[in-house]
Length: 314
Image (tube, rainbow, N blue to C red; front, top):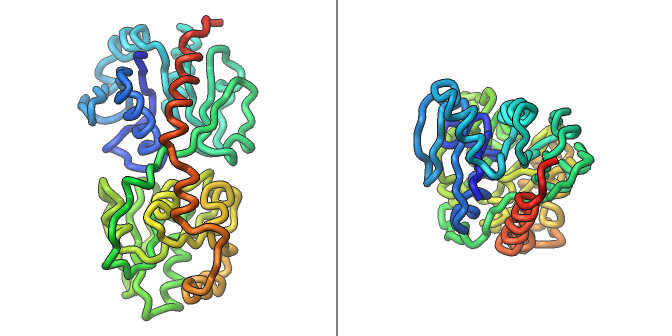
């Protein structure tokens, strides 16, 4: 298949869960012989791990005509959904919309030849589109995270913006001055900092989060909203305990391996961190990560795409 991506922004210009998710999916498909190109709002043309990425604004004919005609399927997500829906209205094409959160796009639900891939059951429940859909959990392979953690000394939050709990981290750290905390810069939104809280180590965004996970003894996730939570699954793959806010997204993803705390209950967070060694969960972090093994699911997803590709346009 020839697959055209319309992701809005793509790696490495924005490194967040949705971009990493999509890239891992198409990397698998490329390993099976499918060809992938991308039309984006990125500031230049470039190649990224075998994908030719085009700046739509500077390559109008190629991006809006030639590549659209070339593609058997178009994958879109987030802001890239608008491009795909507008093009699809003018020139019918089979479009696969990747839904990562509860922000819906009305065109997706009413257009023919549009199919949705949900990142988890929670997103499916929230959006509940009426066309054919597929649920594909983030393809995170626990085998890629089996590293020793001899320097695991930090309680870590990944992406310290408001929604992810940057201010809550500060309040917890103030209450636990002898505990080392690490705040990893996220890929989007304003990052909340308080340099006066000396037991928080602020570190920059990097390509491979495993470097920081190797230094982590507990991952906390005091999010207000998550559809799923990729960083938390990566921690499970390292067998790192995850303490998270009690929201549906984490109940779906972290599930029986999670330690759940009311988001605004600072006492609850302090207590869970302090007593982490005595808290029993139904499953270990690694046991839950193995349940989400993508090796079995990705071939099924490829078969579903082949079926969609062979359907006649409506």
